[in-house]
Image 1 (cartoon, helix red, strand yellow):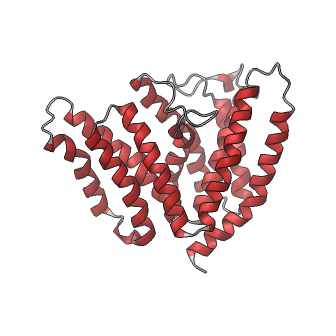
Image 2: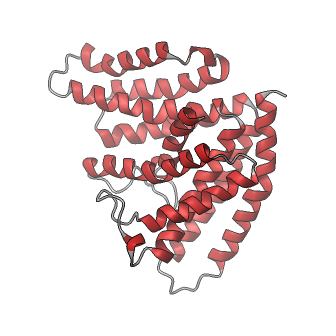
Image 3: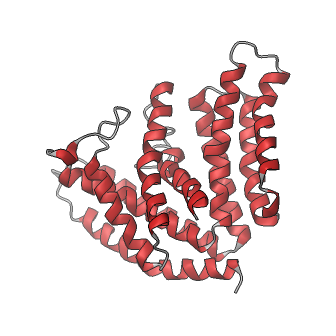
Length: 286
């Protein structure tokens, strides 16, 4: 059986899980009393999830072309948000956007080309605009930030194409992991050892949230028959490190959110930061 058919079957198995979670979540946010401080915010987030989930699963039903379109679309938007936060110029953004389309295309049509040769070209591409523009003031900073953006966004998103059925499992596990982290932090993160923050970069992220994410990520992996200790560790690592990584970028940039167009979440990077790291770790560990 081809990898494409296996991915389609994984997406089909995921439909009842996604429908059940969305249904239960919809009922939960609908009956929240008006005195709950985050009621309006949670309802916005549920509506966003209700729109995003069919797009994510639908891409896998469309095969390699669908996952390419998903990865490229996410990459182009996320690259724009990252470039604004990192203070990059048009030439740097052009490199990021080109890679956001080209790398998923290679992952779909010629995955054998994604090796050390591609890595070398990405490094050269990151330095191209500053070098040709003769930027002797911020050129190295721009090159470093562009290289980081290339690894963080386009390279990571190739995992949506190359990982197949594992990509389906990782995407859903990260989504539920973020919810589990919020629930765990809210329920157990008020006092005690679990209330300790993970990093000064994001004081609201506590060990209680890590525990909640660990429990929530295990569920979809088990239901989809994808659970292994290595994959579980990769997903948990993504849920924990992805958010802290973006917090670091946002703090240096002096912004609260990567954007404002995604209701309840801010920008696209605010939504997929955990997924990007989880995909990278999954490609390394599996």
